Image (tube, rainbow, N blue to C red; front, top):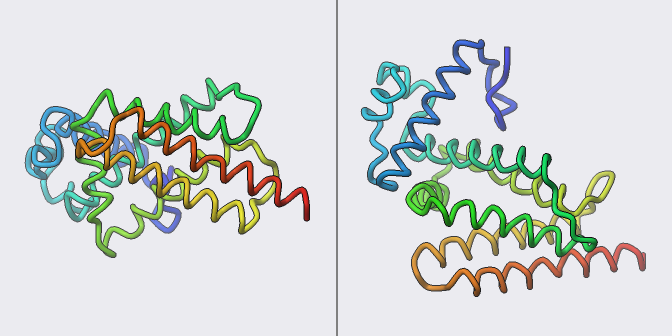
Length: 206
C-alpha cells in the first residue's frame, strides 16, 4: 500500500485506490488545461475519471482541495525531471534560479492549468491546509535540492528558501495577470536567489 503523496497523516492507499486517485488528478489537470479554473467542475472531473461523484468528494472535499493537490502532482513530475536532469551551474544561487525558471517555463506552456492551480493555491482556506502545506514542503525540497547542501538546513537557509518561494509564486501570479513579462520574472527570480549566496557566505563566516 502507498500513502497519499505529501500527506503523511493520511491513511495508506491500496493500489486500486491510488490508481483511482491518479485518474482523478489527471482528469483535473486535463479540464484545467482546456479551460482554466472555471472548467474544473467536480461532476465533470468524476465523469472524466470514471468515478462516482461521492467517491470524488471522499478524496477531495472541494475543487480547491483538488486543484492544490493537482499542483502538488505537477510539481512532483517536475521534481522527477530535475532528478534526471539536474542543473549544471557551479553556483548554488544560479542552480536555484535555473530550476525555478524551468518550472516557470513549464507552467508558461500551459497557462490555463497554471492559472487554475495558482488560483486555488492562493485562495485556499484552512480546510485545505494539508494540501497547501504539501505543496510548500515540496517547493522547499526542490529548492534545497538545487542548492545541493548536505545535512539539515539551518533556520537562516530555510528563511531564505521561504522568501525565494514567495517571490517565485508572486512572479507567476504577476505574469499570469499580465503585470510583468517573462523577462522581468526571470530578473526577479535571479535577484532573490542571491539570498542563497549571501546565506551561504554567512554560514562560512560563523
